[in-house]
Length: 174
Image (cartoon, rainbow, N blue to C red; front, side, top):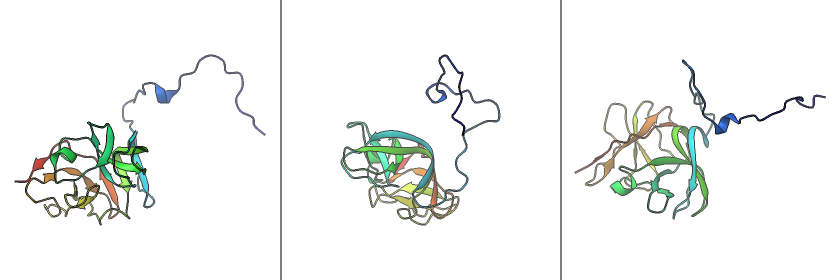
């Protein structure tokens, strides 16, 4: 049977470690429809788990004082306001390697509440690492207690699939 190509000599660049030139009308394409719970598509970053064990679908923030990922919670700006957010796609115990989805789509049906298609999704103020589903064209679901952070982290694509694109903007409820 075939054994592969022969005859190539010289130095060849690995396109994944060099700049990729995107031509006109070209782009990166996210998976059209994630097939099941535990699936994702998007831009990820390697990191280290902070103090708590992380599970697939946990909403996390990058803790700059430790350079590790911890569970986000909207009851404090330090853990949900002007911080870098990610969705855990590689579970791990404290100090283990992890991987965070920074932008893209994620299906964590077992962890997420039922999402409304096109509705805002927020950081939970009640439970660290969870998200809160909003209703279309309404503020339903967003944190509302004093000092809670209100920050849109994405939108419902389906009842189980989150389009994760966290806004850098947030307000603190008074």
